[in-house]
Amino acid sequence: MMRIDAHHHVWTLARADYGWLTPERGPIYRDFGLADLAPHLAAAGIDGTILVQAAPTEAETAFMLDVAKGTELVRGVVGWIDFDAPDAAARVDAVAGRELLVGLRPMVQDIADDDWLLRPELAAPLEAMARHDLVFDALVLPRHFPRLIQLVDQHSDLQFVLDHCGKPQLATGDIAAWKDDIANLATRSNVVCKLSGLATEAAPNWQVKDLREAVDHAMACFGPERMLWGSDWPVVNLAGGYAHWFAAAETLLADLSSEARAAIFGGNAAWVYLSSRGRPTSRK
Image 1 (tube, rainbow, N blue to C red):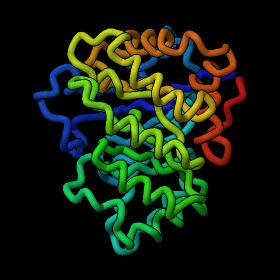
Image 2: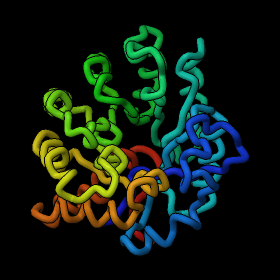
Image 3: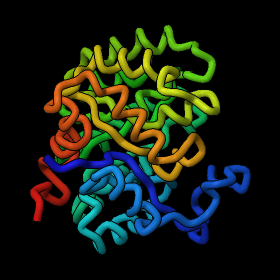
Image 4: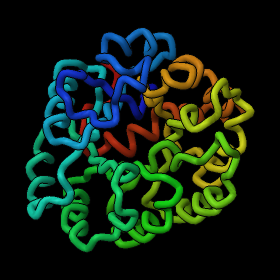
């Protein structure tokens, strides 16, 4: 079964639409391309990837699709459209025609209005996404869970992916409410959970034990058939790097069957993102 990194980015600073990416970000404040990623993928035995948006612009989506078109490595792209535009549904229709687009991701964590997910105007573009078999990647914080659950219930025919396990507050250990919300969200069959982004939510110099409770809980709620692994590279360079996070994930999942691990490290990403769109996962 093909191994897939279900969440990584590339960026070019000169494009100037990464508002969150400032010099204070230190080691990730530079250009990152697929050539930088390739050694990490080779070391981890990764065969394909899902490239995910990092800027709230349609121009960046076009940039990523161009990057993906030039390589067999990228199997699909999760992009962005202006969901607040009056013609948002038409924008979904238009971008859905682009080869390799598999999903869309509004950057909910950066939106000032915590009720943004409940805007009635959001219904039309989400219905368009469902028609085109596009996945909704949910980049949310724990406070957004009640709204996300309502949205998921309103769009039962749309596939949702919870990015970064919903960003539990691992650095403080305050995850009791997150655990309740994860259990509630997991009862919705149209949601899967992305095992990614936890390293940057943990305290500096984190160890595997610091992630264990959250990962075990998410696994118990979603089951290995609804979990998929992603590196969140190059953001993960802020918290130990690709190899450290990949090794931690392997340790955290070591007690699962080989079939379950294969699903989390590739099979589920192929099912969620690539069964209807994107490049096929069969080996050449």
